[in-house]
Length: 392
Image (cartoon, rainbow, N blue to C red; front, side, top):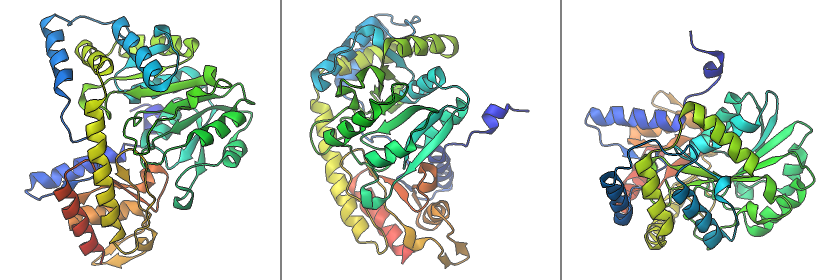
């Protein structure tokens, strides 16, 4: 019998949809997969070269749990150079992806019953990680009219004596929304009054940003010593499979995460670390090229979605997702299909249109559907044409 801890968790809907689309593909069906949150580009050549050199130089032994000093030093330089944030190498902990980084933090600071504030829509794993840490999720709902962003009033109303942390994701998965410097500053003014609250800032989509400079809530001195930045190489450098994420955190949290990680995974892949070091010591030219292509695809997706009756969209400023409100189709029936929620809608789209997407239920937004546009123009056009035809 499995543990109660595991029984309380829900499987990842993004991975479930990916698996179902793969099953259809094995039957010879042409499925266009818009469900997976990863760039469709190859890892830049100079990064792959660094990994090959690391292999030849025999970086094949255990690394320090928080990561090689040279990598952590490269990350601190990146934070100073790109974000004007000062951290020491002791405040950096590298893990097997940003997902583990977030989970490390929650498991290190959350006790049973502690509350974690999470704006909705949220990334699918946040609420499950809080459950795993035996914390209590406090969800702040938003809607498309407010660009899926919480207000300062909503934040303050959600805080209680049990609040231990808040998770902010900007640019956002699944909505692509970005909090401005002024919006983050307003949050900091509220949070400075509650000195026991840790702010977890998920910035993994930092460089997939269509409006210019990335803004981190860690820049505000009144709360800086309680902010944990979460970032990594997966999205910016097209390195999802390499598995390297990291935190920049108060020393006591970094130490706690390193202690925890030492007992269940130890250090991240030695070869990946050397590749990541090359990425952070290099320039951003390759990242800017990918971002320019993503922006083009976003504009294409907006045009295609606006051509589908009943799809209501916001205008994302980052990441590589479109998150239309599909309320018009909830409650509809057709050919034996009954669309009770967005999960039913995505299954209809997959089975009838052979396009994989992710239901908004997984993100705390049951009337929405997430489409990833990390694929070619031709596939995007074909996918949205199929969807338009089957929804008509």
